[in-house]
Length: 192
Image 1 (cartoon, helix red, strand yellow):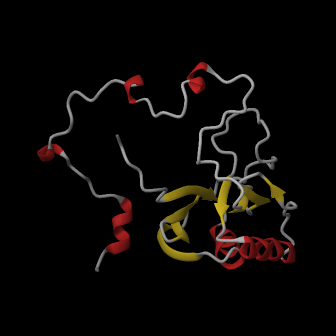
Image 2 (spheres, rainbow, N blue to C red; image 1 turned 135 degrees about the vertical axis):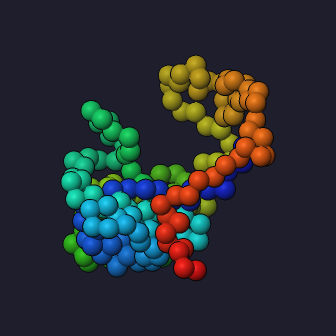
Image 3 (cartoon, rainbow, N blue to C red; image 1 turned 120 degrees about the horizontal axis):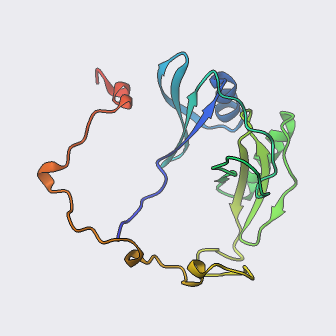
């Protein structure tokens, strides 16, 4: 079985990196930690927490996505609904809500989702954001719950995983054939 550590980074796109940095670094309070590229194709990294980064590609021809309510069905091409960022506690949650309000940024009322309390907002690129903190009442991960009245047959199989649903690896890559090629982000470490 494969074991995962977490999300290293989420890569998003912006037309205006400076406005994006002002929002994420200066308003939300996250640290800008690295940048690479040239005008017209830059990639910058912002630290969300000790083990999660958010990367932004700046592409001058990119346009903000149309505004939509998170969780509401959409038509046409779409691969992303919203990003939920967990805060450490209730005080940080309310401090962020007040900060967004003071900056004139749209933010919802607090919502009780049973296992988290949430607010929703939007970044300058139209990226839908949810900010939450865990409440002690429930942990959504403590047992499998299915409240869908019409779950699919695949869903009815349970929480899994079921690796036998995919072909087994017959020819693993031998140690001597495991090649790793240099990537663009290596430039961040040149001269060190």
